[in-house]
Image 1 (cartoon, helix red, strand yellow):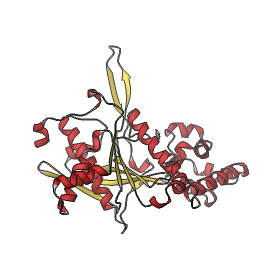
Image 2 (image 1 turned 135 degrees about the vertical axis):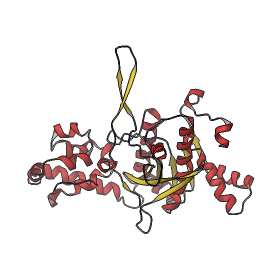
Image 3 (image 1 turned 45 degrees about the vertical axis):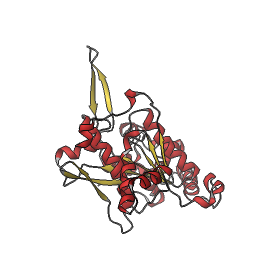
Image 4 (image 1 turned 90 degrees about the vertical axis):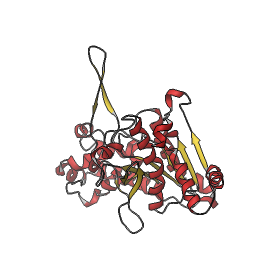
Length: 327
């Protein structure tokens, strides 16, 4: 739980803006925070949620009475409101495909590089996924992202005098992140389960708002998971082969179940790299359970699935032994 200082009512929408990553690609929005206390802004890693939990109340009171700051605040919040609630036919998607507004696209990726305040990415794949989300928001696509909320998403690199890399991880405290628990239509926090050998894995689902589009991120560090299973979503690309395939099962199968629990029925399923490939097996399982045979289910799944890769070389793709898959 994040504890915030008392906010003057005149500028209390700074809280709302902090929890929408719209600010991550609008520097003028970030400046509403950074100009309050530049040193603190650097100290908290440009994270507005953490910033608001640590900024001095006196500083908030001061800017709430500064005409120049309030003028900027009103202008930026007006732009934010216009962006979030566009007039009909004002966005590219609504003009180009007005009949497809309810046809949701689900986008699965192991990492999303949205901003340094949410370190759940490693490199190019994450930046690509993050930019997909931002562009989908700008175009107003009916789009949802699915991934993991890693508390240790990437490491800081150190090099010893012997030239050996040393990795140190800064733990992301979710209470300080621009993320909230995802809730179903009844207001209940969403928790999904996935079967792994000899046990069930539970995962809590979090929601990150990226402009107009939601990003749903799973977290296995919850009861009643065992300590090793709590680590499944701890680090991006960590662990041995069994942990990696377990992560990918939770991402693919668990991601489908998370969307079902949220009442979201995608019309198209986009797998960005192979990490979420198990989602196609889960969708086939659903269709077979509904009465189709496997070949019919496979054809139906293939008809609205999309796969993209940006590392079409063996070193950039996971492979698992038949013995491990059978297990």
